Amino acid sequence: MPILVKVPDVRKIEEARLLKMQVCSKYSGKGRAECSIWHCTVRCLDALQIHHIRNDGKSHRGAAKSKGAGINIYRRLRRLEFPEGYRTLCANHHALITARLRALR
Image (cartoon, rainbow, N blue to C red; front, side, top):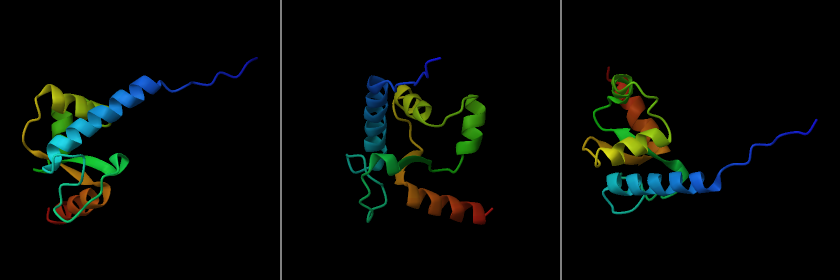
């Protein structure tokens, strides 16, 4: 019996990367896909994430009844014409800010 190997769809992967770059560029405030913290120069697309400024990501995903993770959040933000309340952060700054906000609860 032959072993079936799922081959990744290169076109979909590239479309997802371009979408993430577009959204991260919009929310960085720097005009390019980069962490929005003024002294941070992280530009690695794989290390960039979207941060809910009001720290309402969990409730927002629940209200939207969608997973909200991965490519879905980027699609939704573009479809809504880039609403306010988000910013691009590198994974390190995202984790630090989220931890500090949780500690304040």
